[in-house]
Length: 156
Image 1 (cartoon, rainbow, N blue to C red):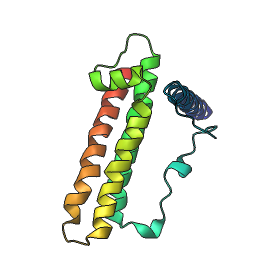
Image 2 (cartoon, rainbow, N blue to C red):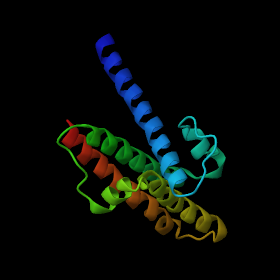
Image 3 (cartoon, rainbow, N blue to C red):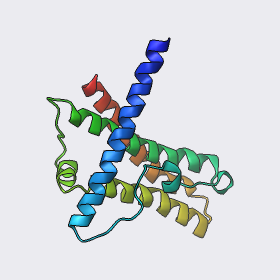
């Protein structure tokens, strides 16, 4: 039992190192492009996503969390896979974004839009067609979760 917990702990430590290195790459890329990012020391998920429990309904939370977890899983498994020898990114768009060090900012923007637009639309126009609005983050997140499973299959 202790051997398994040490193994999972080592994986969590590696994930944290990858995230720190990713933030350093984003900061360096932004600086090279003429932008300045201040106070980027740690990857803090709560500062990126601050959700009050009472503000979203359960279907909204499921839809938004699917989008968030799918993107996070795809980011992590892709980075872990690329650190291994013999694996490379097959999709040309993420490969180009990785080359320009814009993949993480692009994903953050896409997730913000996939969550923000439906949430804004649902609150602005309280319609009965909220399921159509929630399909955007749900389909987006499900697609990214499938990419995560595919990446895990390649890694293992």
